[in-house]
Image (cartoon, rainbow, N blue to C red; front, side):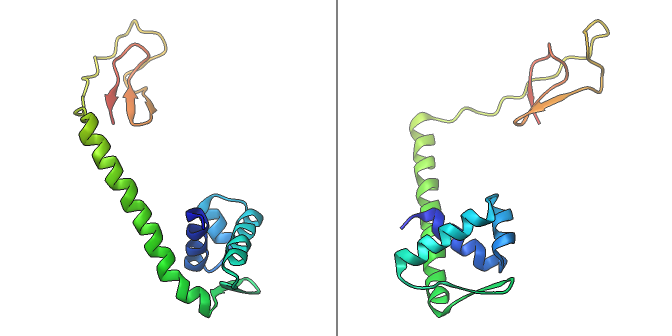
Length: 133
């Protein structure tokens, strides 16, 4: 049993719709439906009632849902614990803030208000040192 299928199942139940669940998960709706069908085949039970546009858990689906949520929470706890130990073993670098130099009238393509932001770092111009946002 794969965790991503459990996550898909929980999301479909929470959203009550394959279309909304697919949008939330950023998946194509047919692919999401196929993954849920694979989970149902693997378990040998229908987990969802598909009536029109509404999707509701079957009796089996309602019984499985808390265990699926618990499995996802346990997997997240495993990731968090491993990440904590990795940080302790490797050490953590402190956040470093770089002061931005004043804008220069001679620098090409920059103005006092032009900035670039890439993954949490901000550069006032091409030549300036980065600083955290």
